[in-house]
Image (cartoon, rainbow, N blue to C red):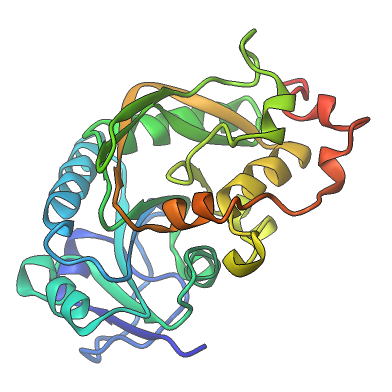
Length: 283
């Protein structure tokens, strides 16, 4: 896998320095951050163009709120096996305050695995290039993870609401494993949480995403991530009054997976005598 990395001077001045010493295209010398980066926001793009305008405005607005709260944020655009039209859109000068990294994975999970080690943030928040999140999501998510860390809890956080729009409209309310409405047996039929959560970088390094295999009906990478993180002691928490907006296109990974009746791989945690323990670990 080859990677190219670019970052404008404006991005480094307003954002954060890289953590992996990758070569920058402008030849600037590597600098040590003045203090730790709190959050890396990673926008992953594949074939999106104009629909990404609202996405990037929403991301910039949420980053601004987080910075106003005193958090240090590293903004990253990941171009994964992109079309020329997508590259042209994301390389426009209006987005030069973002770091840009290019990969050839062609897979949402694998490209997240590829970028995670080079992110400088204590926490990672992913955003697909056609989705949006509320202005308060990043700031409130960081605060929630900091609170969990203070009580020595390994946590992954999710927005309270998941609003689906475009080709279909729906709203999902996320619940925590401590809720009386939660049952781990629900995981036999559906994932509780969307992939656009926020987690410590450590979680993504410890439990990387599996590769999808849509042709053989195995493609729900975020579903498996939920199960595996729960089984390894990561607590899934909900951040009140925050929202993600998921665009459901006529043809997307979710639609294709559903049409092919995709399922989760056979996992030891899903055995009938073990599933009852998922999400029920004491704090």
